Image (cartoon, rainbow over all chains, first blue to last red; front, side):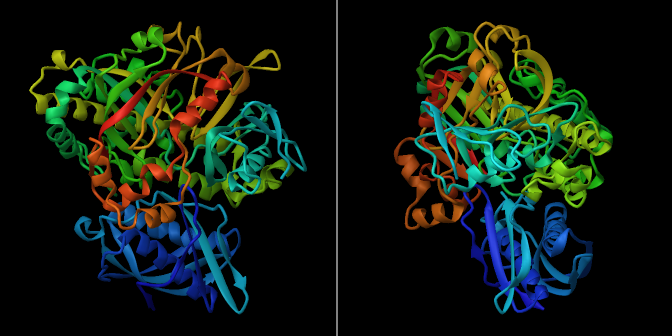
Amino acid sequence: MLTLPQPFEDLGHTADLGVRVRGATAGEALARLALALGALLAGGGPVTPAAEVRIAVGGGPGLSGTAVALLRELLFRFAAHGLIPAAVEVLRVDEAGAEAVVRSGRYDPALHGEGADVKAVTWHLARLEPEGEGWVAQVILDV
Amino acid sequence: MAIRRIEGDLWELPREGRMKVPGRLYSVGPPAPDDPSLTQVRNVAHLPGILRFSLAMPDIHWGYGFPIGGVAAVDLDDGAVSPGGVGYDINCGVRVVTTALPAADLRPHLHAAATRIYQQVPAGVGASRAIPRLSARELDEVLEAGAGWAVRRGYAAAGDDAERCEEGGRLEGADPGAVSERARERGADQVGTLGSGNHFLELDRVDEVHDPAAAEAFGLVEGQVAIQIHSGSRGLGYQVCDEALAELTPRFAGFGPDYAALPDRQLACAPVSSPQGRRYLGAMQAAANFAFANRQVMTGLAVRALGEALGLSDRDLGARLLYDVCHNVAKVEEHLVDGRPRRVLVHRKGATRAFGPGDERVPAPYRALGQPVLVPGDMGRCSWVLAGTERAMADTFGSSCHGAGRLLSRGEALRRARGRSITRELETRGIVVLARGKKTVAEEMSDAYKDVSDVVEVMARAGITRPVARLVPLAVIKG
């Protein structure tokens, strides 16, 4: 299981936030993408992982659609319940969907006040695909 | 990418490949051919049923799907509605409230007054509970009634606030039943909250009047205080758009070859008249009404807080809503297309309606002058109140710019702000800044934006909107 912090690149999107991650496998790249979302929501504040849940989402079109679907679900859990993903293991990822084990910490305004107000996970330039020896995943987040 | 100058600040991206219309762009200076937002203007030109042009206003910048600053009108019968052409923050918009308060009288109490408002209007990530959490029935009422719901509960500058909003503060056709449980969960306790990012509440001074007749009709007097509020439909609207895109993205190619040829999945769309299109429109209209109510509740809270901080009665404060405009919306409107009136669906993604003089859709007090067009700038420079023109009706489906437009990414803004206190820099210029996070202030600093006056000037030179008055910030509240 990967935990915060994990490396990610800022794509330099003008209005919003674009993030790109790499991994040895599709699952590792997707887990890092989920944790990049967690890092942005936490704004550099510490996140103590607590409850562990198994999350399954339907996917497609393509693997990038599955990546968007998992991040959409994580963002909803943050928006509705204040849960920041802090540790993620992707058990399965394909065009039909993804299954992941996620441990989250609760949002605390005192610790996470510098976190991004992520409105949504967009489909624009979304990727989860092989590149070189490994895999690359990216999304543009609407803020 | 081929770009040719039409005249002045107006440029064209010629029709190529499967584009249905050319792109047309109003630009501050010559457009850079490698700007990704130009590709987005071209992509939008592929939208089924798009009429005349894929338009971009001079505050254009890179969005997702549509560029920010994009306008696309489609035929109601064979056109497509695109949730991405409205955006996640449905009916993100801005309003200006005028007051009878001279800025000189506010100055000694500025920090206290701003602090009082800051305490009353929740701001920041996940801000909630400005008013008690709404029951399911109350939320349905908000989704149906928009600004009027809040006015009836006493959240108002004056009793006629709703009439002084675009569309009377309520979009027709709203279908609360099309708003999901998840969207309701995200929004039920967020009415009356500002949010974060580029949303703000400002106390401004009317700095310069450029059109005395229009300024008088709009209630703008040099030296007096105005309140400006920029926010939208909060989590409810984000979820409505998100779910519509999730439904349409895997399926839109099935609507036909024009749909399958769309070059960006974020442009996922459905025929306006299809069940999917109608369902999205009903939910979007309901979310737009939520946004009108949100800004209306904040208006009531801010006006009350300002009066309390200064010990002024409602009468002495003299608050009146000037106008409230939508920046992210799709609306059914009648426009002249090829010389004949047609009902079209106008997507405005980071653009403002700018109807001209004489239009019956403009509130009666302003009708002879053109619709007030409210254009916020950045927190260190200024904002503008403009008026719509007949030229806008002829050239841009009655649309104009919506803001300054970002120049820098958020990451680059943070890098350039390193070692500086943006709050202190603004305070040395007499601008009070109250914000939940330093990072947001750095991301939103003036350097991150084009100069809104340049943007407004392009629209004025093109005859699309007419400058009425400039507002300068006295106090800025950010999430």
